[in-house]
Length: 516
Image 1: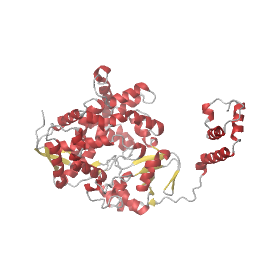
Image 2: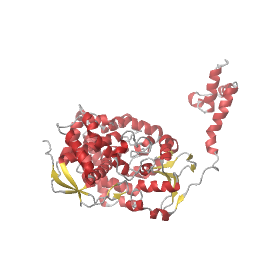
Image 3: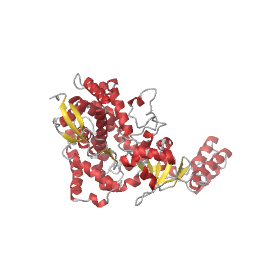
Image 4: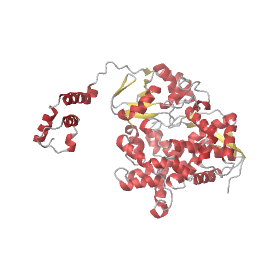
């Protein structure tokens, strides 16, 4: 109809009118002046098409010229109010922000001295908005730019948005599926046993280091095919320092340039070398695919999308992830040991699971481990490792009546809802029955230990299995105690929430011998 002199069908007139209004035709056809004039004439043929075109055209520019007079002014939290909160002293960030939300509403601003102003989104309504609409208005790239440079990469998965982010996640999603772990359950259990075989009765160990290494003992071999127990501690220290200097900004950047940190930075390259040496076609023949296989395939297929400079980060990511999952396991183990009534039930489930030897997938994920599963969910409600996320406003928007200007940085405290009484009655009470019918308090965006929206943790179900299986193995084979016995949990909130390094576990007894 565009390139001949025939009168087009009425339906075609409407379609051409809409496509032209949306400025798409020039990307489909090469239009000369005569064709452009014919398109213009066609668009005037139909009154309905013209009306729709006017509406669409106004909508395209309306957001750039919208009225903001009716939006509410964002309340500012006085600094003295921050100092009065008991949750600041206990370093419980989710509870602290839940307290502020009750007083100041779902959107408020904090202006800390010597730091950037913080616009905070807190509450079930903002959680729902972020989950459903955040991808259209917020982006992750800005606050991660400096951190990417630490690893020599650009366009890493946590910093991507839009189509590239979707494509990246889709490409590596199979590697983060629980199914792939279940298919290698024997190797998973064997690797974990090698680590706990190093535990000696009478030893007292740092809970954080102990749990991080236990998680990494399986995560590293199954994800990237290497044993990294000899360097994982240094990798965690380097990542921790990089987050504090370039994300949390609680330390000056030169602290990442100390001799010890320079030495640890070189270990990132060593991880890449180990992975590449173990992933030649001959060595991988007959082996189940892992995350490294998926990443290297992506790199070979599109070296612009996943360049070699990004391999330093993506191939060391499982070692970094073991830090977060290990810290979560530390919280879980502490709460189990501190509450004998739950510890006994979890131990009974562990003994039942391993009674006939190594369990299968159905046993680990079925009703046999019901208490363990709900116990872990409650620990993740009270002690989420990543309590908030940071974004920049890419497109100005309105949230709960408040204007978020383009370019402003916002802090999404998605786990503050974990401490809100209307979502989780008596929120400070440890109650694993919250997750049973008919209560099911975790359903919806109010329960968000894995984040919200398109950046929700890709390995959420995988993490659940790592936590449950390792906890069951710990209590099945050993009697552990909190050291000292009267220790009260202290939280280290930066760069992510973790137990204080002062928390220790004492190995008091071996309950079961490890299989040879």
